[in-house]
Length: 84
Image (cartoon, rainbow, N blue to C red; front, side, top):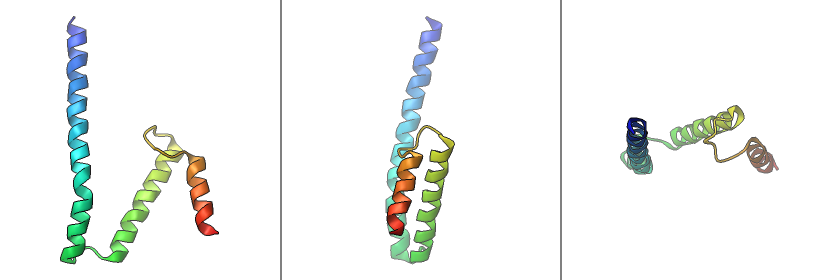
């Protein structure tokens, strides 16, 4: 019985933590828009940010981290289609 209760608490804690992460991630586009409006983020800064995000996603897919929504083949196809 004690093990089941502990597992349930951990599961509930994970759900709460995930909910907090989702809420925080929802604020990112708002923060970027505000930075553009206030002049604290330029177009090249935004381009570099997106490039870092794409690199991270590609590395996660190559490493097989499990949370990537794209496979390595999907990424390769995307990059090949952009070069044409």
